[in-house]
Image (cartoon, rainbow, N blue to C red; front, side, top):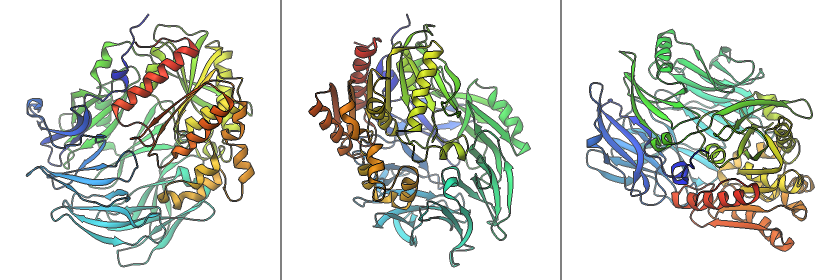
Length: 615
């Protein structure tokens, strides 16, 4: 029997993560804990000697939730980072002046969310940001002067949901939502010109179409787009004529990533995610680089950072049976050097491979997923946890997953499946989930369990359903709509009432509300329909124990979503446990809270499935 992996190794703070090179390539910044709280650290680095870890110093001073998002300004002097309060997602932009170590709150506005819109090498002391200060539903664009700390409004938002700037740091692209769920890509030739329509993105393409960048000359726009195709392709659209050129496409899966040459703005490498990542080289000058990078590690590489001169690339490798390793790749020598692993303590334990599988659902749709079996070799008659991803407009992917490893290590089969409505498999697949919450999307989960039972993997009497956000909804739906399938359920920040969910989305989601109405339902027109698809409507059918966890400050799935189902469970006398975290939002950022939740979930699952648990 393999050794239990401590929960603090799986779910505690990483040792180091998110390395970023300074623009001049002489310093490395990364996120690591200081006194148990994630902060940004800094150390000198050179191609000859590597990172001088002995000179590492912490340069931020967060002592609460930790920092998870940061970036170098192109002036090589300021580090920028975003932070909210208690998980409310009203991000403020902060900076550290590395010359003086002065720290500033650059957007000191209560109840306002900051978005970074663009930064450019040629404008090293300027940043374009979005602020919903004047209207909580819309982000206007402001230009931030890092030297003075001053904000100047650049663009009033007439109703757009996203912005894109060109290489001159001019906002020249925007996306206008339509009442039917379609989106119009708008462009303008300069800051003084009027907006005009470039491309109408039908509602069915809205989740599979995104901008990438303007060309260096500003005359075309690169997009990942499924308009006129089944899967999302990389295309170039001429701004004057609207003519479209397809640069990369895959018949089975969407383009999931594009590496752009920051100087020429031309695409170099395109990533398509099937069961694992596959790479399409468009720029022959980087073909040998990719070959050399792939030789560094057996995992799937992703491009994390680079200096402004593109001499050094930082690469992370997705790896299902070990910690995430980071390498510095020297392009001139075509050699890579190891930097660090995100959690080296994982290497002391036996991890389990994530095995792709597929099945055909009851109505003939092929869906794909991943099975993570206990690392002791057992593959028959296992207690099973169906771990449902959130979104639902997202997907599970191959690689290190702490929850999959935790469940497998405790003796369970962890099943993760990309049910209809998941992204990555083309627009027909994602659109097949429209208005199917609690119906065909849930049938896909039921069919996945049936598949695992038919294969002999799972003990049908010991199957749990577990998930967060949409996955939490699916857990509640599993307990209410299909009570005979599961022996217990774990719901993390999952909605119980679809009408109240949609009525209480954050104000800055208002431009996207037509997509919710199209894909889930309209709370004004579909009252009975939404109620029929809400787990709360069938709470009296629950006959299995539930563990429910909620953040009090969650702006997406409000506390009342959990309170409603907990009240129904109390009234019906159903066994349940409710964990409410007063200082969390949509998920658990603080390590202490994560430890409380996972300890409770581990005990809960062990009791009802018979797996192992850490003392």
